[in-house]
Image 1 (cartoon, rainbow, N blue to C red):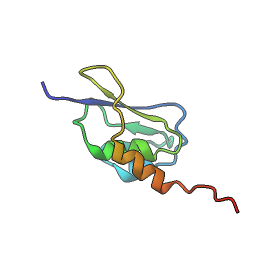
Image 2 (image 1 turned 30 degrees about the vertical axis):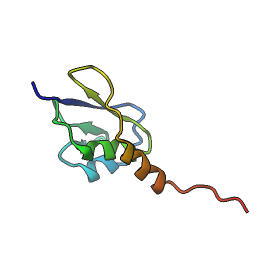
Image 3 (image 1 turned 90 degrees about the vertical axis):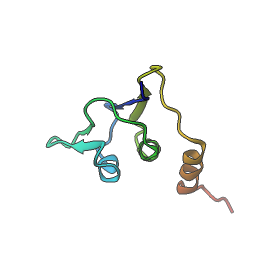
Length: 91
């Protein structure tokens, strides 16, 4: 059996649409402006890790269906996120 993930969008979603713009094959935005994940399980894709990391509300979760555990972000995704976020510089 191949590994598959379930995508979940929590109610904390701010409706920014970043996920649907970045990964339209995995997310859609309804008429009510709510983000909806792809129906059913999806194959693992690094693009999804990037979208999870980019979500401003941290409202997207990925679950490994074989283990029931959350999919951890790859170390390189954490580095990219850190590089995107501006840091406060004190004089």
